[in-house]
Structure formats: structure tokens, C-alpha cells
Length: 251
Figure 1 (tube, rainbow, N blue to C red):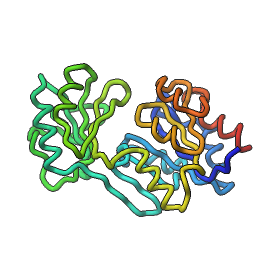
Figure 2: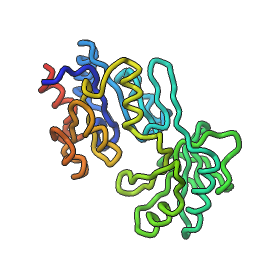
Figure 3: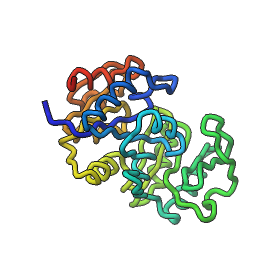
């Protein structure tokens, strides 16, 4: 068994149950890991404001949020933003679609051209111009169809890329903003190598870290591409697969 010094996990669909809770069992296993000196980190597509409760509950030593647009470790923050010119170019292209639902994640919160209750968005009608004095982390478009994908690909700049999240959301980010880049930055902050980490994930953004960490684990509810890239497949998120796998290899 590899010498594991860091545990890194995705949140939605991986560590969290489908109702967005974390079981007492999972919390206890992660606490036990930290007590043995193993660092516990998170890498998520969520913005930092939506994971405060999980950070307090689990005590993550470092976090990657917004797919690598923001990395936090020991009070240090690294940001990988989309340049304003690139963002407005992309938004101009996306607005050529019929009634697109567009949101942007910024340092001032999330803005959308319609209100989205799930995210409690601030409604903004100024696209493609970005709100003043904001740093752009991510552009989100609700939907996943051939026309949307084609227009997204036409609208991208050399400095940006896109992925599909939860099979229903196109998310566009800086090429520097990937979970894998964020994970390397977190580990580097603590002087660790990817070989010393175990990673848990379920979605497209998790494939690269699953492949490149010392042990890559997919939960059983993961996309087939993630499972095919993994060293092991744990039980599902609703069955505390990540925690059970850690207990089996560490204790």
C-alpha cells in the first residue's frame, strides 16, 4: 500500500450524499485520518461560499473551489480567472443562442440573466458586458445539447476551455483553472507529491486527478469514464463509499 499523506475528495456525488449531507460515519473516518497526521482536502466545482458548513464540519486543510479557479491553503489564496476581454467575447457568442440561461461566478458572487432559485443568483441584464469591478471565475450555461456545445466551442478563446457538469451544465473556465492544477498547488503548498495522495471523484472534472494521484478512486455512481480511469471503485456516495474505502486501507 502506498504511503498516503493526503486525502483529496470531490464533494457533490462523491463525499456528499444526494441530499447534500455528510454522514457521521464519514466525518468520524476523516477525523481519524487527520488525527494520524494525514491531510484532508477538497476539490469541488462549488464556490467557496457554499462549502462553509462542510469546512467547519470536516476541517479541510486546503480546498480547490470553482474547478481550480480558486485555491486556498493555510490562508494563502491563488486565483485563476478568465480575462475580462475573453469573458465578454464568450458571452457575446453564447447570447446568439435562443434564450440561453447564463450565469457567471465572480469574486462578488453569482450573477445570472434569470433568477435561479437553486443558486440564489443575483439577476443581471447587462451581458455580454461583465459587471464592473469583478473578477470572473467561471461562466455557466444551463443545458447540454448539440447546438449549445457547438456554439460554446465556437465562442471559446485560446485561454479558456469547457466541461460538462452533472450532465446538464456547460461550465467555461480559464485553461489554468482545472481541478488537477489546483490539486498540484495544494499539495505543493505542503511539500507533498501527487503520488502521496488518494483522490475520490465521480464526474468529468475528476478524471485527471483520478488518473494522476497515487491512488485514484471512483465511487460506484461515477460516470463510466471516471470508473475506467480509477485504480479502484468504492461504494456509492449514498453508501459512504469514500469513507469505507479509507477505513479499509488505513485502519
